[in-house]
Image (tube, rainbow, N blue to C red; front, side):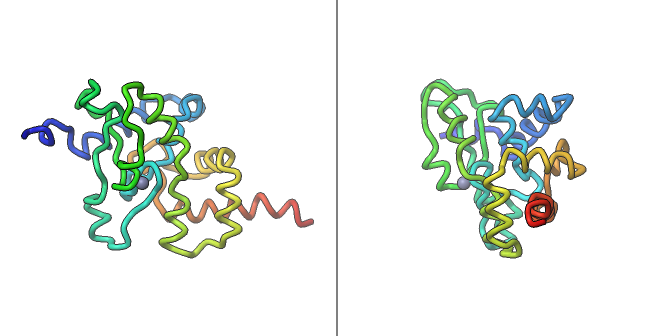
Length: 182
Ligand SMILES: [Zn+2]
């Protein structure tokens, strides 16, 4: 009883991580921390699982972010606090899959290594070719840099809107492959 109430709201969790990312002077600083680097790819504007990028096909459900669950980084039963910095917003499957350990490094490692939102984007829209998706996934590090340099809002609450991501995956692919063919 009362346990859920003591957890911060999803908005508070989202705002905490947005503020955290915005507190850095440059994207290079964020890049030094793989956990924050992955966090910077989260599309906070259009709710999707922060780890895998899943969102339900029903728009109304997705918009209300009802499918997202508040997931402790360190479980409260292992001493993790109920403050926003100890939470991620995850889909049910990721919530179940993610490690419950006293040391936050395992959760962070899992989070960083979990395949991210590109796949969800692709399945939902199916407007990108498999080659375009694969290229962005295979060159993920470079793509994040490309995204940060070519989108206007990577440090704002909107982060990368879905369409921006799709357009830039395409552009990234085109730029990467033009040189090769000639
Ligand atoms: Zn997920």
